Length: 198
Image (cartoon, one colour):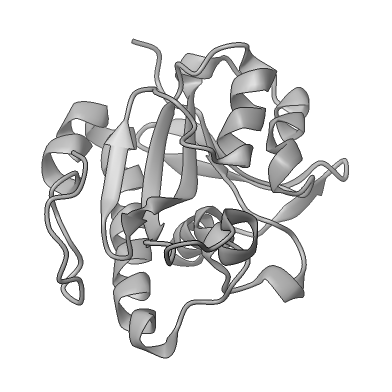
């Protein structure tokens, strides 16, 4: 299986979207960049990117600037194949505190994943999904994902993002299976939820 050489963190650019549920992919990549003292550079207006020497190879971290629904457009500047990409994003079907790592699958209604799938022509790319839900009954998903987290969620969210950054590092070092075994049934300390969807 080809090695991951591109980590794509989904989110919306602009200060007005900082701290919202839809920006957990951005938050995870920002955490990795902070840990490893990496600086972001504009990549032709499509994305912010940085090069990272890790796990014996060069990894590109990329945050699309095309807004969530057009996230796949940022892939035009990379030439990456689906099996060399790891996508990090939010998931409102998972409760805050839970992480799910998969080698492929559907979008679950996530417009960013739909855009990436459209750009590749296949859903067969690895992803790390971070819990941003559950959405209240009757809530419009498009509105809910643009809300900021509540004060009682701040601790669990921070722990979850840290765990997701750890998971990305483990995927790059030991592969997807190792990360799935460690994180797919692990809740952050502040989470009272169950095992989720596996």
